[in-house]
Length: 218
Image (cartoon, rainbow, N blue to C red):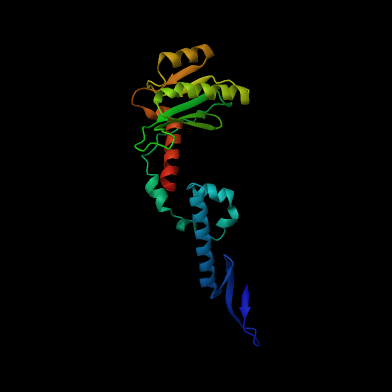
């Protein structure tokens, strides 16, 4: 909005409304103030949504990014909490239907025990949709029980059949009880080669994402 001097009608400045206030001054300073307010809004929303990427925020709230210099959208918590090694190149393989392939991995133990007494968590991730189930574990031998629960939930709620599960070679997956259940259900068990966690990259990246969100929020 333009502001003009009474009587002469000469424009004396530009007013830009931001956060309920009018910033009046030269055009450049007013626009700069509005841009500052836009950056602060985006950073606040970024923190409230678990430090989601700015690209995702731009797709969700495109109006908020109009006139905002994306080079100024920098979050120190993300830079400190999300440092990672370079990723392995993806070969682009993915299931063509939901629940054909399930990725799973156990993370832990954590140095701090949760309120419920858990020190680990296990994830079960659908390869096609990336739908994820997370279960907190007090002991690693609970993985088999939670896989049974997840398998029954998929069958009853989604009317689907799990055909393949991909895990590492840890003993919570490679044991007689787990092997017998998979054999009875006709589920193929794919295990990674020793020392090659990238072969189970979907589950590993999900663990990393969960921990990054937790560290950034803290």
